[in-house]
Length: 320
Ligand SMILES: O=c1[nH]c(=O)c2[nH]c(=O)[nH]c2[nH]1
Image 1 (spheres, rainbow, N blue to C red):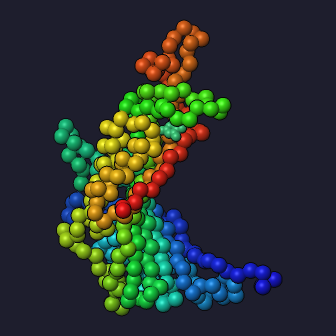
Image 2 (image 1 turned 180 degrees about the horizontal axis):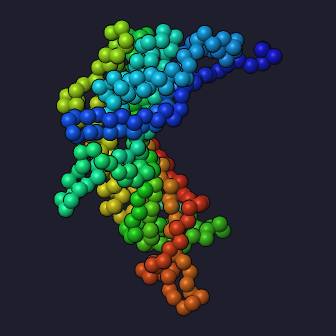
Image 3 (image 1 turned 45 degrees about the vertical axis):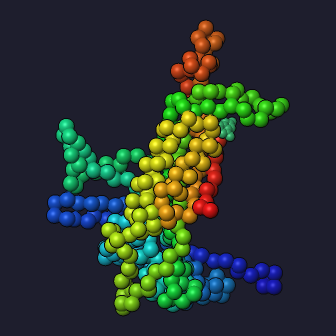
């Protein structure tokens, strides 16, 4: 039996650790809510192959470390940095753990606007949409605990958008399978998944007993467009929405490419940008049976939103 197989890869950890944190500055509170995934790699093979748990950091402990750092880390409000802190802490603390993979999904809590001028309330929030900020960090101490390397990617999931004109789809292949009509005006709706990656970075190892002194540049020191720039995500989101709204779209593919090009142009540290754009079809309802034209693009007013099937257009655009 044992000659037939071997353990070729192993990674384990805790998924869906739900964390909410409030930071109080007098009467003004700031809140974040994260879903955290912590996965580890290292010298853990015998837990699989020999049923030997002596190398196992319990996944329950990973959850506890996540809550502990949520309490004590100065980086809790910036998920990229919190993820790096968490990963760096774990690979520094456990000699036999060489890599940590930290994924954070941040849910939206925006301040409730009050009164005519919409003044943001200091401690009351609303969930304004299903959109999530998503962070993926790989912390790699394979080369040694004092030579920690990290890779960061960040982005957005489930940003739902729609435009009611400014989108066409023509000149595609026509053959015996083609039913789709060419249209010079259509509805374009998609739920945007965006992620962009930065080049690898070196992380100074924590020197203190508790492995807590994770060092990140202070928020006003970081280079614009770099992994330490907390505004990259805002810029990527703004440009995505702007291109979506203003592009005279020839296809989802062509609009996607323009969005990605702009993110690379505007953020010097971004190495590649990936989008996954489902084409959420809105089909004009045929009303010819009752004598109404609802099919000619200019006359199409009533549509049936179709959840499935949807197109799915994906691509990665990389810096040369
Ligand atoms: O923007 C589009 N790209 C496609 O590849 C495609 N295919 C399709 O049927 N409709 C669309 N729309």
